[in-house]
Length: 377
Ligand SMILES: NC(=O)c1ccc[n+]([C@@H]2O[C@H](COP(=O)([O-])OP(=O)(O)OC[C@H]3O[C@@H](n4cnc5c(N)ncnc54)[C@H](O)[C@@H]3O)[C@@H](O)[C@H]2O)c1
Image (cartoon, rainbow, N blue to C red; front, side, top):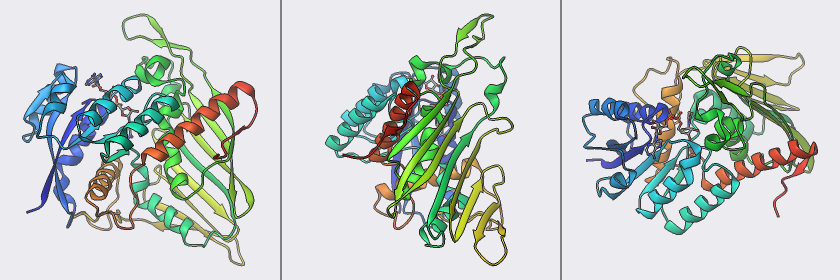
């Protein structure tokens, strides 16, 4: 009989329900060491609590997160709420003695992220932060290629996450477009963890950044016939320096809500003197590899379903967002159980704090129109 990990969700909106969908098909994972069961959900909205009534294992539905945390039935808590609530709720989860998978950006700002990391370390609980795209087969292959030595000398890195829906000025405002809920870092808080996870995991930690931040629409329809302020950064381009083998290497981190033509496009490109790799969710089956030969040639490899944690899905089929989200949860559960092995793990508290250090430096860089040092003391 496998161990059962009982999960509670605080915040049953977009991502809370995505998590429920991942748990509901946990049995697709083959030879996985633990089972995961959703047992409790907290949200403030009746219609969302009602949605979770269709999950047979859920025995507690509440509007009070302390009630969920008081349940001895809950081992792990997934918190997916607006950023202004991260710190208070994450600290409550840890104080209740539960393990935590925290949604990004792990606190509304750098100070909050540091306090959460400190509380996590003191509590001794298992804490990780969400970032699912690195668990796609294409992203895994880019990481493998980067580690293989086939790049030669690293030339440059681009890691990007692009959205286009905000190009429509009639799109109503929501909490992600307002500083008081989303944070001063704006789009970096929303999309930034997704672009730093792979570089940081590969040891590409910037020593300096020059940031260009853009804000285009300053107000949006409030959904009640009026207009409301929309004061977050829409686009952020961070031109970073890496120090690799004694050389300075450029790395660009791009986070955009105004990216013409991109619905939800996460992509990465790493180039070296001997080889390169490129993968984009816009073409989920395509891995592009460059290997220096006499003639210049990028080769397209048609990917299948080679996820880090094997599933019953046929190896020739194509993966998507729900698949990488399930794989991320599998990585969380495996690492918690001491069974991750050599596979990619979820974002650690140190990596989450580092992402905030990068975003805080970006704000300063934009304010001063100068490059800002990120060198570690
Ligand atoms: N990993 C990803 O790909 C991804 C994608 C989108 C959002 N996110 C992150 O997930 C988090 C939530 O985003 P979302 O898109 O699901 O937002 P959402 O607005 O769809 O859902 C948030 C939910 O939190 C609930 N809530 C608010 N205050 C609460 C409280 N005190 N107690 C319980 N519930 C409360 C709201 O009622 C709402 O249902 C954010 O941190 C966001 O950055 C991650």
